[in-house]
Length: 313
Image (cartoon, one colour):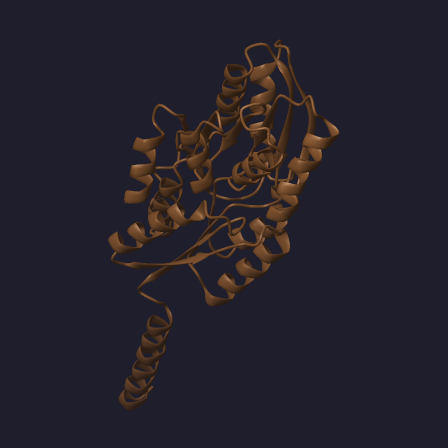
């Protein structure tokens, strides 16, 4: 081979390698996907934005779901087509989305947050121990109903693992008491239907002693229906999360208490930890493959302090 030919081949190889290098982005692209568009995710978004500001070599895309597995699949397919390096998602229906999550995990780093899919190939879950959170709610129900009574539970979907686990925790906490669950009603994340479910319950079961909302928008829906029925103070309310109306209801004495998650930490930790995994560092992932973010109870005693903290975030 002549020197001229050798030089030409070397130049060609260098050009190809340079082109490959240009095609491979130096900035990692990460995405955070919610399971619905509830206001709950506003604080989580702030967490992702803080992580985005701190991570010099990454950009973060925040995507809102609409409560359906079909929309989540569309979002994930779009993100994969863009070549994202990591996706953190709260699966709506983990049992039936396992295949989608596994397909995504073959192409990118996949985390779950807020609601887990442990049977999938996701690398890590960041969020609440929802069974423990359910037990907290069960304790609040017993506190609100010391003499016992019949209760009804409301949630968007029972397919979601967080809903299943919260309900499990409540059942564990009230086992052996004189409290019984007469119904669990779902609304498919339709907030009009969520309120209608409560109104129908109050009419069909006038003896219901407490209403429990498992998802963030269920608290305001329950509160509004109870107010319209003129049963504030007569029917106890226990909820999850920190919707503005829920916190106002606690302050007014219309809601007994709520179990709140640290959604800011969901956003912040999911993104910062996923960035580590994308860089090849998985040393932080525990054997359980779950990073648990603790919950807290908000009642009339601490609602002002908590509200101030949320407003600051």
